[in-house]
Length: 275
Image (tube, rainbow, N blue to C red):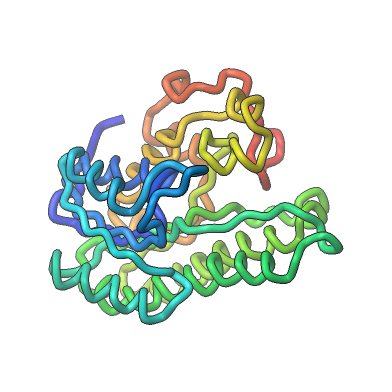
């Protein structure tokens, strides 16, 4: 895949202290982007690696300019501050990445309401806040993109019935994003969803989806990052309103060898049926 530039462009991301979000931030930085991250991780957590500050340091080391904003994507003041600081520091916003999410896969009778509220607040309210507050600046960009890390709308009973609360939260991100693609088509703002075909080797998979065995059947976060770059470096007019799978994006970009990403014996991610 030919590496295209993001030089001079500014990305604002929710989350990104670790995992897929950090991999996307680093890939953008290596292509010359300015990267602003809004995250709550001011202090290290012994269970999880990385803070917003260590992420900013890695972004700088990768060749980008970084801005770390400590705040909560659910909080309107935090989002206002992140947008204002990003525009003040870098002059605008070209890319919004809705990355922050919470996951709880319990069924309806066993999921505490506080976990339901957390997922819907982060995934739905947070995605809506970050994007809506950025839209006046995206309108001014020559190649504006909204990218949400959310799945295709697979209405199979297998997925609808597995964990309805989590499904609602993630599908809500997708619905908002596809809605923005239609709402802002005339403004030239692309809006797409991106989801991995396989499990991805992240702390969430390690801690919540099966430990070492699940990680052994996962690909690295870089596969999602490389797919994100293939989307974000394209003209906004060429690709919008799609719920995309990482491997399909890479294959279209000419990547046929997925072995560098690991996971020979992969486990399909949630919401993905065998193909």
